[in-house]
Image: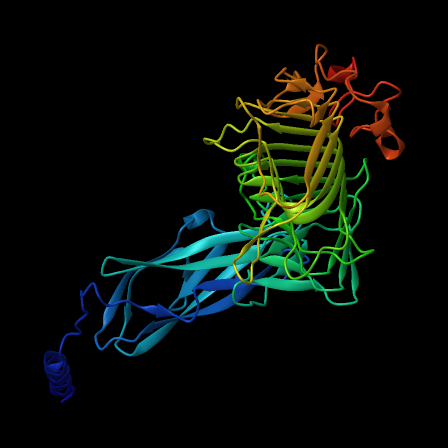
Length: 484
């Protein structure tokens, strides 16, 4: 009896299976899957070794079944992320079925040791999906080190995405305790103040920057022993001298008595080092720059538009466009500075130094000419082009500039704008690409006028006493420099 019952059950099962229609999966290349997000972000800052999990939804909104031929992490087994599909954890999965109008879960996990200084600030990978020869990507991002993370969370049409870090009537201090990592723009609001204390390290993600809105205030207060450093957030050796890793420090107009100041700072490897511009209203104060190096930017080192700047003991070097562009008018006093543009990463057609008095209004698009006054004393302005200085002045406004006791590479010289200057003589830097101290035979030695090297300028960018015979440029010649 049991024998016949078994035969009947087997026959029923065979008949049921034979009646099932096979599941068909479309190979139509026009059909794609979609996702709950294009970026899975792990925004918890770890304080010890730990892991966290996020959920990603995959949707098949089509009327036909699809088979995802591959789900994989771009970094494979080297990734700090792992994925879980259908209860299985790993780095790669194949032939995942997703039925019409259905969805599936993918769980993404990351494990971080935030005290590992070899980690980048942002641990990143890509989750790659391949369906019917369609390749789709979801980005994965997690914090990799203990740091103060500034992540943009606001957007106004026409401006970059930003996060307010000093609101109106607030004074916020950034300290050297932990580095700051900026993703987007860190914004100082109108009547807000950001004070950056000695030794603070600020790292910007690709396309990110620091932005002082109209009548906000930035005060960078480094010391010679502990400068403030602005740079990219990639820590690998490959990125040490790579320009263009972040965007810029963007300073709008300041109010009277609350001008921006940048002292004892290093600003490197961005697109524009410092952009200071009049935007909504007249600028009422000077930007003071002292003991600061602006180096290795794909665009411009110092770019101004209808602004007032006092700069001393400064170096602006190696930029893909102008090193210094003073435009739209304004007032400028530069003492003991070195402008050196030996950019070699692409073709440069612009001079190291450029002046003009033409301001384009950002609201009506019209151009206006304003007064322009510039004085450069005890400076060096040189580079690898035949002429490193140019001007563009519209007639009407009062336009004056003068160079005193300065070395310049230019064909534009006369007896009116230049006093005690040297033209087209190599300043003989120790290394024209990376070291702007003076060589033993430099013609800049003793060229300076003591009148422009008093007070804080008695000492050079290294803290060396200039005495009564200052050299031109940011650095005083020291015979034993190579041994220091």
